[in-house]
Length: 370
Image (cartoon, rainbow, N blue to C red; front, side):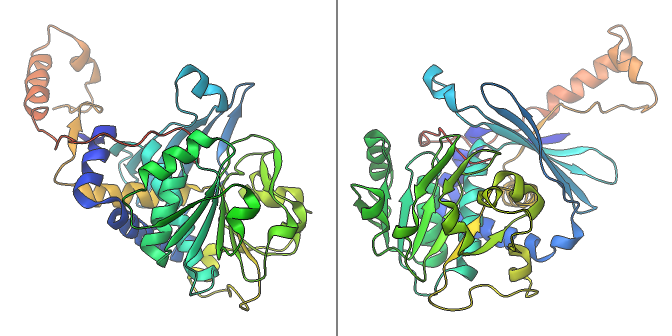
């Protein structure tokens, strides 16, 4: 049987484990996999663009496990009461090709993006960084704030969004988080005195959310909103004068902030810093930029972590035929065949396993990162 984790299962798991401990564990899995980066198959995601949005496939494998995520990005969906981004993923056994796990990844992607941001900041931001500015209070914002709190000890979050209701949502969701929340009146107000600045806006355009005059020496910039061709958040002069770190550079040159610069603009991949093959921040005054677009290895880590953490609670689904004779697939499809009755009885018995039910509602999701 193939194991399945749905949205209700994720909610129950986060209630049981806690969001911050979950983020810490997930960050450890991501860092572990980045340290063995060279053992993975890597390719830029396959994107199908349309007038309304994009549908993408994100695959990778380490030779033992194969992971693939299906994800969309449709900015106009909220008008119809639908999520901007949804996703699901598959973790499979390379030796047999059998899917081991099918999981929701709308919530999981938001968690893995936040965990990756914090993993990068641990090696790129100044060690005593305690103030985070968040430009954009959409679906990513709460996860980002909690990840930086859990993994870097951030104490104050200064948030700004042009949508007042988004800031209301953010402040309400994190009222009991232990963070000191400052509701900023502008981008300039939010970044004033910040050690780390995360930009997580949703507009699919070449925006300049952050201008050069707002960037101070020593800041660490975490740009996660730009994740497709033609979508950026930073003024190109900021990018050109920062030490830039990427996930998978061939993909980032198409989708990230560096798409604004020359194709040979020098960058360092995060895995090189984490594995000791390259340096990170060179001085307390240097401006560092994590130009993050999301990469398949992070999804691989998230699915692997989720499976390890949830083994006792995962339910099975009848996705792959379980045949007494693997050469007789037609025998399963023929209703009068005795094998059909045996298979049906076996499936019914296997589906009686129960999963822990959630006891509280989840936060609204609208624009998680791909």
